[in-house]
Image (spheres, rainbow, N blue to C red):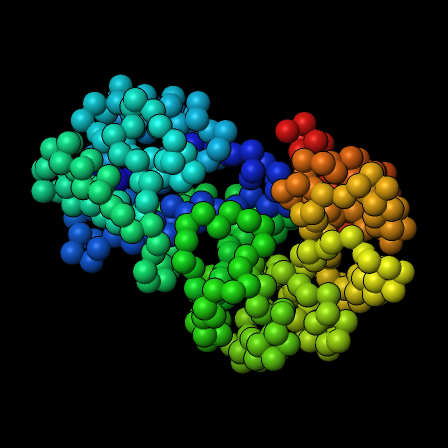
Length: 385
């Protein structure tokens, strides 16, 4: 049987990140590889990313003739999910439609047969098994609805990145195309859509992390979890393994203010292996010493050719917003990403910092006119969300 996974489009939450990142659909890539071994050879999984797809949706449905379509729906995509589920039922009447993700917690659409509300791994396996064994819609639905275990007991198997290989080069991080996330902690849930990853999940062996990097020939690598930079000893061991394997890549990672300030040699070493960008989570500085300390870290990053991206998640008062804007402009830093409450309350900071003339000129000098225009365009689009 053929299973079609669909990302309906890009959600509002992901649109916030477009100046920086267009993420590969990791939720579906992880789900694709959780099928029970006994069913692996009976199922072919294919994927459509409707954010990137330019071909006819109807034509592709006719060509694929899937038995099951799984949509991953996020808040704000209700209309898209309803429309695409309706088209599936119209074009491939015998196909079942399942909905996973945030929207599965709601009422769904009349064109959706199964809601993967609890544990998507068990729900997916129950659905596929039911279709293979020719159970009725009612019986499959009953089995899916009776799943009570909301937690995933074992770490997820690695993502099946093969399902989106044809789109791979179009998933970017700034000017670095073909960017692939590599986790240094075990993945225990699907909806990890934040720009910055975990800090308290069980750690993966660094040898396994490096194997992942080694397998991604030609790709840029985004190390999204906090643990590597939070622990200088772990970072040092990681760099030793990269050097041993001669894994020169374009790296993006999540940094630590303290680790950088106290371990400049590790920053220099990582920059030599291809570190291009560090995401620096920042709350509002507490006092003058804090301003100086953070400014010194930004200076160190620039000294070693690493571009800092300042990530702000906590909302700021107007006075604090203006002070931070001035501080960033004074240091010629314009790469800012607002998340959560800060995105809702402090978006004017994009106008003051990220799309100001001096930021555009600096981006042009460092990365070329095309990338500078892309960043400026995406920041302007973000302001309109």
